[in-house]
Image (cartoon, rainbow, N blue to C red):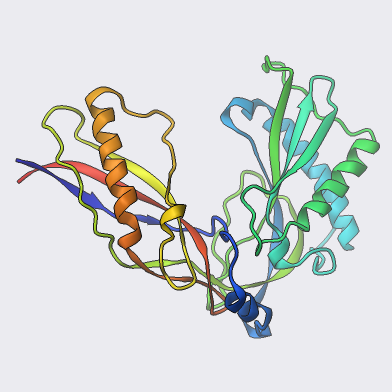
Length: 290
């Protein structure tokens, strides 16, 4: 008889602070003490979907131009980074700016705040859009890649920072190209941690078909460590299985979505204050002889 073995590798990162935090969490964050903060560099991250990857080399050049403008505004165009606390606060770095370029090198932009929430303000986007406005008015253009067949290509700009641990040490920050603009005081952050695995009734897998696979889910762990059932969503794979494998995948997915809210977590914390956090977790299924 076949059954399913499952593993629970937690891929929990500071993906986003989800939905409203509630009065208690906000009150706690408003009273954070200076000793929970560390000054860290803030960088501009530039990314594009695979279909628009051809624009990235040119986008990186524009990002360098924006970096120079923002650094000048912060008070240190060259040399060590200036403090950017007068421009934006650590909790206002949410959202991104979507820049759309045309064949003639001109570009437009719009703010994307779909992954931001009440807690993560988006004032930082004003800093980016001001620099874009100045660059466009100054005649800066984006070089159009000859290999691109589209009439327009888009890429995203956002502010990113290294994570700060509760001991003040910084987590490595992975970006395509490092474009530091200023520094900010950032409180330490600790991601949500699973304390009890969810109880999931997995379907029996037929003998035919592939030997293994996985589903990936996003869900919100609230400030009490509970999982909001309404927040459990599939992160759709780039290529879903079909046929018998596809049918089993859907049954496995449905069982996992139903069972995930039974898991328990230690909530994420910022400077010691419990907060809501969106978590991404993968669930693997493998064939095993019983």
